[in-house]
Length: 505
Image (cartoon, rainbow, N blue to C red; front, side):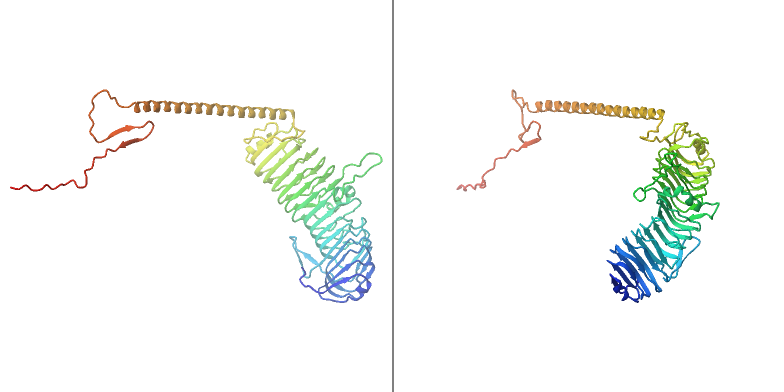
């Protein structure tokens, strides 16, 4: 919601546009417009101008001087020219650590689905949030951001001239076939996200744009993501007449020296990705679900976590200069070209190092040696000579498992299953014996009770003379409690005292 809400003007034609002059913090909604709209009288300070539902609009012109917070254009499929030549710009200044400050709010510009918009004239070098999606495929000096220097964020899937860009908070761009991105002046970026980088033509200009031999190193202050999304822009390999397909493209980011947080690379195929100048990764590097790729991290010396999992037909890279790390998890084909030591200068791995090798020729001996030297805190390794104190981890269900590994899994599973069967059999026999003993004890107790009861109910011997004390007769019922039968004494009548008459003397 706007900090300064003002009057809202709805524009459908040139007559409506002529009536608009100045309105502090006002907004303009252009709807169902066609042809050319010229706002010759518009001046002052405006909050937002939006264009929607105007497929017939061709030219949009704001010739006078004014300030604007936000311009949003969507589905203007016939628009060819956008002109704001006297827009009062607002510059952003970045500090050394990547933070930004600005005196006034810069322009937020969003253009989506304007496939014929080939001319944009905007008098500003700093933007707030810049979103350019579905614009023409060719870039020229007139197309924004030809002169953009700073921005809070940029998100684009269009071919744009970024040669003047110096600093940006978040940069996300989607590579499409035929685009030539250049970052010759880019020094700092917050979050960097690149989708379908393989679509750059041989990635030569991209590589040059980040090359340490030509430019200063680029600092990625937050995270960097390389993702391949076929839904946004499918990878289109270059076809050569002499061969079926040109060599796999090289995607080089050799000018990036530091990534402040995470570096993620996922879902690429048939590319060579190099970070030849990268030395420090603040958090985790994750390489996952790539196919037939090569990676270069030759100069990385420190990272929190290194995770490389399930990269088919890919040899996982070496880390020849890695010194400190928290945790490592490799699952895939381990490079054995330089011997068994994949971390030759490692000084400390504070957490756990897990290596699940898909290739049978990988040897764990060098990692075991590092653990014995207390350079690796915990080690889990499968391969030859995996004499670690922690059970080995066996990768499951991958076709790259060796014959010996498969046999080991089969034997281990058989032994484990047999053990379970024997344990269950012992438990069943044990409980059966226990139940039989309890049943026998119960039956024995019942027999003894029957004998006692028979003796109790046989009655007294009546063939003789016996003396009773007269207090009662006691008899016990079978399997019952003792009952004393009371003997009631005869009572005399209440008038038992009789006075006799006196005799005469």
